[in-house]
Structures are given as structure tokens and as C-alpha cells.
Length: 298
Length: 242
Image (cartoon, rainbow over all chains, first blue to last red; front, side):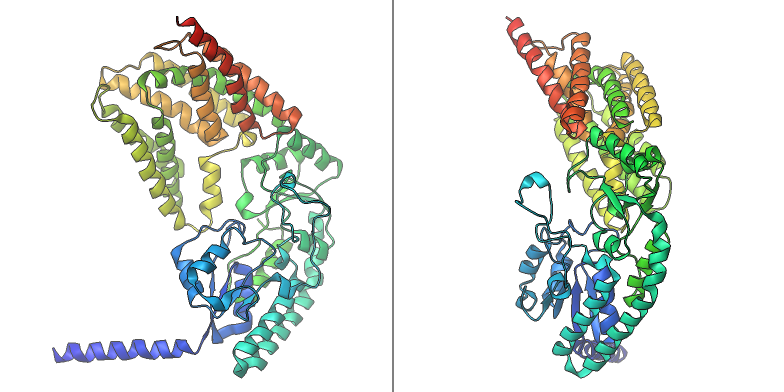
């Protein structure tokens, strides 16, 4: 009995020590894996980063689970893409978490608006449902441009410096190192990725990337975002692809399917699964994504 | 050519499904097809999760399901639709839970479960036609009285419906299965086969052409065309009854 009591005491002490140790850490929650990797890179061992969506999931539609709300409940900082990308699933989770620190416009929230100097893909003219499921505030897939990734790291570093001034210099240094790494690699990526242009993509997820690396996007498989194509659209697309000598069709991992594979066959283009996030820790994960994209995806 | 394969796929379905649909209407069971398709899909998910052959698991589970359904006697007091509906829910839930263990398989799975008409290749069509033909032959030997006859019936359904759902999607398959047979329904029993087939084929042709010229998603367009073609026939049959 005495032995068991000692063991119990040891276990309880062990757990308490863990809790106090963790209490010093910041808790960051990122909506998407790529954003989480950048946050992990800046924060390092000073924060616990949780990500809501996982690699390969469609960022427009993440199925809500209770654990996600729980992560949000304890978060000090929420990082999201914004521009309406997560509008279908994130707000209810934030409400359910009852965490007022992470609401929009508070110190515990940041998204693309805090990061971008220039928003691409803003629709012109009158916006109605006729245009399909478009993003009225602009194209939200902004992390696909490595320069925006750097900008995000800098913004995260500034925000963490406010939340945890003790390590401010370290955060800023890490963001700066990351910026150097990216700057060095952009020319290599740009040369390598040219061979896949001109291209067709399923959904307009790669706008920021194609602008940065000066790639030519001919058309999209979905005639309007969120709408299945018709036979005439697909047959016309095949001719258009042949006419423009399209090299590759870029698929988000969640849009791969028999229809697109067939399209690639008919149009003599290569079907490439181009991820918007890959497995990996910290900055390496984010950089790895561009390495994979430059190599042609899968 | 997307237009050509879509048209051929719909025509194959239009010439096979009404035969099965008429029997399904006779027996007053519709859910069994959905349940069988879901069992097959869950089997596929198990295969993916355990890194073994998906199709083998799917086929195995479907066979077990067929034998189990056939064991329910025709005139049983147990409400068959309810049993099949419940089994569908259980299989769907099991599949969902298995899926959450696989980070990358979600998109793949939707493609498996609810294929797209536009994705059908010539090989898929050949398989559909062959299995459909086999299913119709098996229907000749099916019935309600003996266990073997019931097994024949559910196997015929599984052979025709499950690959069709995988190839062209659930909505279109169900439309083709039920709308032509319903349109040809006369009074208390099925109308002539040729009438159901006529509705099916005209629905297919009108639907695909409508989708092509009006730039619409083809599966939905065909289902609506089936409804439009079937409705006048249905009303005419209602009048004929007296």
C-alpha cells in the first residue's frame, strides 16, 4: 500500500510539473496546415501550435468536430486565411469555443487582411449567385505565394512579441532567417516550375503562385466555382487545351477524380496533384511544399 | 469525347435499369440498392484503411449482405424497408468512422461512392454493359419462393446497381432505376417493359442533349428529363385504368 501511495504522489507531481511548464507556453491555433507550419517556425518551442484542417482537406469545407472547438477554447492566437475561405465552418467553431480573445479584430486573431499588401482576384462589377460560389473579397489562397508566407511570418513575429515580449527578439530573428531562406530559393523554384506552363487548374487555388512565378493559366475545369462542368464545357476545354498547348492540369488533392484524369488523357496534358499544404514541421514544411510544387507535384 | 461517353453511359443504364426497377417496385423495396452500394463503399474504405485490396473487401461484404437480405422471407412481418434503411445508416456511419482514420482518403472516397458521369471511360462502359446484361439474365431465374431465387434477385441488383453508382453517381442510377418503371406502372402492377424502356431511352437522349446545348451538369439534367418524359405516360396510364 505504501508503495502505491508513493507512486501516486510521484505521478501527481509529474503531471503538475507538466501543467505548470505548459502554462508558460503560448497556444496558437491555425485554421490551415501551411499557416500552422509558419506559426510553428516563428514560435518554435515557446508555443503549442494546433491546426484545425489537415493536409489534403478542402479548406472551404472542413467538417466540424468537438476537439476543434476545444483547441480554440484555450487559444491565445488564432491564425486564419480569411477573405471568406473558412466562412463556412470557422465562425461556428469560434462561437462554440466561447473564447473572446480570438474574435476578429482582437489581439488574438489574425488573417490575410493583416498580411497582404495587395489582394488578387477581386471580382469586378455586380456580384450575384450567377457567378457561382466566388469569394467576393478576393482570392483567399494567398499563402501559395512564398513572399506572402514571409510576410505572414513577420506579422506573426510582431503579434507574438506583443503577447510574449520576453522572446520578441527571437521571434523577429526567426522570421528574418525565414525571409532569407525563401528569398534564396524563389529563383530556383521559378525556373523549375516554368515547364508546367501553360496550365489549367480545377479551382482557382493557385492565383498567387502563378502570378509570383509568372505562369500562364488558360482556364479552369469548374466553369464556375462549386458547379460541376457540363459536357460542352469539357469538350470545349479539351480543344482549348490542345490549341494553347497546355502542359499540365493542376489538381488540388481534394479535386482529383476520374473526370479530370480523363480530361488530361484526351487533351494530352499531364495531370498533377499540386498540394496547398504538405506534411512537415515548421518552416521546413512550408518550404517543402514549394519544393514539391516546383518538382511537379505528384 | 465527353458528350459521347455520357450519352452511351445513359443509354446503357436506360436499357438495363428499368428491368430491375420493375421488380423493385413489385417488391416494394427501394432502399436495398442504396444499402448494397453503401456496404460496398464501406468495404472499400476498410480495404483503404487496412492497406489491403479495396475491391475484394467490397465484393466480399456485398456477397454477405446479399445472402443476408435473401434470408428475409418475402412475406415476413418484419418491415424490410426499415431493416435496409437501418443497415444503410449503420454502414454509412461505419464507413465515416473508418474514413476519419485516413487523412487523405476523404476526397478519394467521395469519388468512389458517388462517381461522376463525366468520368466514365470506355472501359467503365464496357464493364457496365456486361454486368447489366448479366443482371438481366439473372433476373430470369429470380423469384420470391426459394432462398436461391431470392439470392439471384439481390445478386442481380448488386451486379447492376453497385458498379453503376461507382461509375456514374447515385442520383442518376436511382433516377434510371425508378422513374421509367414508375411511369409505366399501370394500376396495381407493372406496365409493359417496352414502355419503361422507351421512357428511359428518351429521357437519356433528351437529358444529355439538353445538358450539352444549355451547358448544364448532365446527371441532373438526365434525371429531370426522365421525369419530364415519364410524367405524361404516367398520367395517361392513370386515365387508362378506368
